[in-house]
Length: 229
Image (cartoon, rainbow, N blue to C red):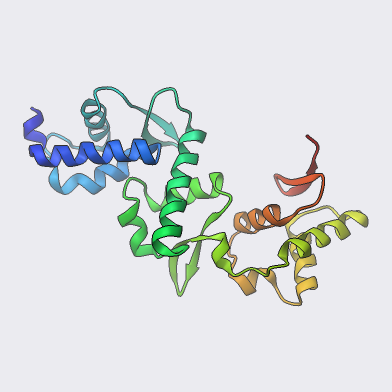
């Protein structure tokens, strides 16, 4: 039956990809990998993503399993939770983005480089598990960009820390809108507009990363709060 699914070489290629993703990314999205290998698979046998997931487990001699996150099925190693798996995924993506794309990966390269994930779920993983990467639009195209490629001011940490400190001193809650307004007034321009920061998650990441006040400040839902360790 197995030799009817695909040629020996093609099955070897699929197994090699599965091994690569489990080793370097920690997991992969079943549906995305299935879509990628559809052209070389007998669709009369492997008729769905569920069938492909079963094939992946078979090729790996049951050394992986399927679990859901974001209501999406992923193949991952047993006894490894999703947060560590996704952190490993982020580390690999960051290496590729920085070393091979100088910090900005264009949309046409994202699917080619990371075919084991859909763009939609890559966005979720990066938003939830990365402190340095984010999706943005450049010239109308979606890109993955490293925060260091934004060209932020060298003294941004001082600006953000001073803005947060001033708001705290006068009792204004540290909401994203309040902090952004204070930063923009200090800089003399809209911080969001100047650096093309289109989503709140990226702005929150920048603020938390550059706020060097003691005690440390971290986001608690919509409010930046002191963290006493």
